[in-house]
Every structure is written in C-alpha cells, then in structure tokens.
Amino acid sequence: GAGVSQSPSNKVTEKGKDVELRCDPISGHTALYWYRQSLGQGLEFLIYFQGNSAPDKSGLPSDRFSAERTGGSVSTLTIQRTQQEDSAVYLCASSLGQEYNSPLHFGNGTRLTVT
Amino acid sequence: KNQVEQSPQSLIILEGKNCTLQCNYTVSPFSNLRWYKQDTGRGPVSLTIMTFSENTKSNGRYTATLDADTKQSSLHITASQLSDSASYICVVKTSSASKIIFGSGTRLSIRP
Image (cartoon, rainbow over all chains, first blue to last red; front, side):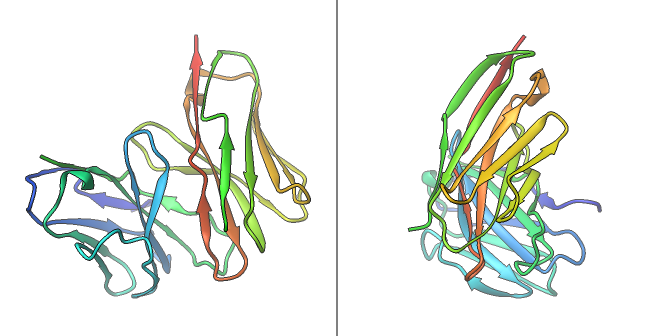
C-alpha cells in the first residue's frame, strides 16, 4: 500500500483484557514510532524502532505495554490487562530513518475504548 | 529540558480571513522544525520543514517562518478555507540522539 496502515481502526475491549494493535509501515521505512493521543490532547511518544530494535522505549507508560517489530516491517503494540485510562487513539508512524530529514508518515490510528 | 510550546491553544476565525499560529521551542541542539496538519480522525500530515538556515517557506496558502535566534516559528494561513479546520502541530527534531519533540497543537476552526 501507499501509506501506513493500522488495524483495527476501532477496538472496544473490557477492562482486564489484553489487546494487540498492528502497524504496517511504508515499505523501505526503517524507523517506526508509536504514539498515543487522548481526546483533544497532543501526541504522547511511546516507543521508537530502528529496524527491529527499539533504542528508545522511554515513553511506554507501564510494564503492561510492550511492542515488537519483526522483519524490519510490521509492528505490534500489546497492552496487557487493559485499564480505562488506556482508552485513546494509538498512532503509528514510519520514516526513512532518523538520519534523514524525512517526515513522519502517520497511519489513521486505532481508537481503543476500554469499558 | 527540550520543550515545544504552541499558541494559541485554539482559534476560531471566519472563512476567508488570515491567521498566524505560533511555536516556541527550547530544543537544543536544533536540527529542523516541521509543521503538521491533523484532520479530525486522521493521522498528522507534514506541511513544511524548516532547517536552521531557512527563514521562510511557503506551501500554497501556508507560509512558515523560523527565527533560530529567538527559537520561534510561525505558520501563517492566508485566505482560510473550511478545509483548513484541523489541529496544527509544531514538531522539532534535535540533532543529537535524533529526538523528535511534539507541541500540543493549535486547534483551528474555520466558520462559514
């Protein structure tokens, strides 16, 4: 595809359940980012991947959050034992790499609602 | 501490009017500054990039300025259209550790 693809677009889950969010970056983009955006708020950095490694995971809010990237492409963000405060839009972005002055290309996000 | 502050937080103007959004940053060392537009329910899209040596850059009805001495940038929108209604986010990249710092955005509403 031409852009960053995220799935599902919407996810409603019960408190305490685990969820997996998927991100398909633009082909050839080595850098991949996850952000969280609460309603009406700015973007909150979660984790950055360069290839399959995550040199910066400082934004993950708790050990319930984890992410992985395989094959230098698809990434999944997993939230275990979801809480109501996890409700937000989770945005994924990819770029050519931090050494380039290339923009972040964002997906349209996964809207997570924890009931 | 690396920070990006935007003002105003929100703005409502009439269609056809001009407006200017502000961004102040304390990011150092500076690499570049981008303005992104985020439509409701969508991911942000890059409008323009400013590097250290650039003072002004236009993209259609959008004109961005950068004053690297005062660490300020502005985004001027001319002859606003209803489709300009969105959040505008200022994003600054450092040249060390390649950190990307987001402002909290300005929510712009254009009224007919």
